Every structure is written in C-alpha cells, then in structure tokens.
Length: 320
Ligand SMILES: Nc1ncnc2c1ncn2[C@@H]1O[C@H](COP(=O)(O)OP(=O)(O)OP(=O)(O)O)[C@@H](O)[C@H]1O
Ligand code: SF4
Ligand SMILES: [Mg+2]
Image 1 (cartoon, rainbow, N blue to C red):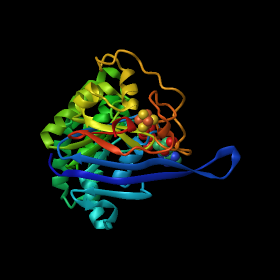
Image 2: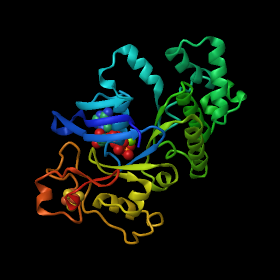
Image 3: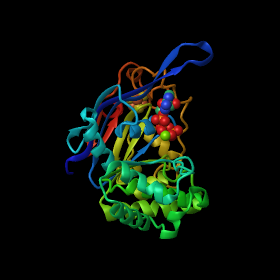
C-alpha cells in the first residue's frame, strides 16, 4: 500500500463531565491510544457499539475536539501543530458529513446560500466562480438548479442528506468523514445515498472514513474495517478478512449478531454484562469483563496489537 493520507499515533481524548447527583467531575476516556492509518483512495469503515468513541475520533481528526495526547499526520504533516492559516487549508481538504440532515442544515438558509457559504469563508473564488461551483456540485449530488432556491424544510430526509453531502463536497475535499450518513434515513432511500457516496468516491478520487454500526453498509461500501471498543481499535483488516476470518472475540460477537452477513458464524455470541463506563475503564484488556475467552492475565495486562497477516491486526492475547 502507498503512504497513508492520514496517520494517527497514540491518540487519546477525554471529556470532563459532572458526576450528577454525587457532585464533582469525572473524566470520560473516549479515545485510549488509537493508532490508525487511512490510505489514499480507500473507504475505511469504523464500527463498534454506541459510546465506543467513533464520533470523537472523527471530530478529533478535523480538530472539532482537541486530543489530550498523541499525533495526527495528514499527508505527512502534523495537523495538531498547524497555524491558523495552514489549518484553514486543511479544513478545505477534510470535510465531515453528519448523521442527522435535519439538524445539520440551517433552516433559515436557502440551499444556494448553504452551498455558497463554505466557499465564501474558505476560498478566494469570485462570485461567478462560486456560482458555477455551487451549480456543478449540486448537479454531482443529484440536485437540480431549482432546488437551490428552496429551504431545507421543503425537502425529504434523503434529499437533505444530498444537500449536506453537496455542502461537504463544494470545497473539493480529498478526505471525507461520514458519521452514520444513512442511519437517520428511511431504509428505502439509504441505498440511494450509499450509491451516491460510492459514485462520488470513484469520480472524485476521495478517501473516506465511514462511521457506521451497520455491517451490511460496511460490506457494501468499505475496503477495510476497524473495530473499536472503549476507545481502542481492537481489530483492523480488509472487509474480507474481518467478515470471513475475524479474530478478536469482540469482532466475532459483533458479527454473530448479523448471521446473514457472516455465513460462517451461525451461532449468536451473547456478551456478558454491559459496556463498562468510559469514566471507569477496566484494567488489563478493556474487553475482559465481557470476553467469552477471558484468561487470567487478561485482567491484569493490556495486550499489544499483533500483525496476523499483511494489514490484518488484532489486539488480543490469543494472538500474541
Ligand atoms: N461532548 C461530550 N461531553 C461529554 N462526554 C462526551 C461528549 N461526547 C461524547 N462523550 C462521551 O464519550 C464517549 C464516546 O462518545 P462518542 O460519541 O465518540 O461515541 P460513538 O461511538 O460515536 O457513539 P454512537 O454510536 O452512539 O454515536 C461516550 O461515553 C460519550 O458519552
Ligand atoms: S486479551 Fe483476553 S480478554 Fe481481551 S479479547 Fe483477548 S482473550 Fe478476551
Ligand atoms: Mg457517534
């Protein structure tokens, strides 16, 4: 594989929150030492239970959140050390699409202005060039000229997500972070939006970080998959490796919940207990409180990530 477009090393992020009725504050350990490479032109899917840190990772990558530790390189440059001018250039290249197209569009702005705004803020294009770019980008996402005169409330959820995608693409980005881009949409229109993302990726040579809990979406769109648990990546591999030869007990449990996708895994693996609180992380392997294959040392020591085959890596004592 070529050099990674995005290189994440030992990344940590935390939130301080109120403890509620007991008073005081607590620290939510949302990211706990993420190492991840995203290669140019690939769709890397990020999967894992609610609260495992997927959105935090995406937001940290575009500096909507600040990490407490670690490094993020984009095209070889450390984005955490960029000055405001360099940051502006980076923001043009990396764009995010959010889950909820109802919340992410300004209801008071016509679609034309919604698409024009990022160009006004981030580029020196003339009004004529902006106009051309808005119309072309709308067309590329399946929106005709007439749509541009309307307001968000005049569109369905699927059309709104097209508008949100157009807004992300109007700056001609290289890297798109899509956080559950279809999970708020009607099942009947999810496929259209997924196909749109697939076409855009091919036509504009985009690199995607695709966050989704839906394994069928991953199988349909992604090249590689990273599985997250309590702020760590516990397994990463190609779609083929993860679906056909999953290694980590957590990955196996996740896949067993969708038997029609993973033909080899017929029996559902039921995990014991709830997801531990990221405010109070388990010692040793963070999965040990729920792992069907837990061993004595898993409770005390944290496994390193081992390389199984090429780029298939797993963080579990069963493999190192
Ligand atoms: N702004 C915030 N303030 C405090 N805690 C937060 C904040 N954002 C996220 N968290 C906490 O950090 C942890 C990781 O959250 P995150 O939203 O990244 O998870 P996620 O994997 O995206 O979940 P989901 O699948 O539900 O979207 C969770 O425990 C969450 O409650
Ligand atoms: S290290 Fe131990 S507890 Fe963790 S996933 Fe592997 S077997 Fe399970
Ligand atoms: Mg999320």
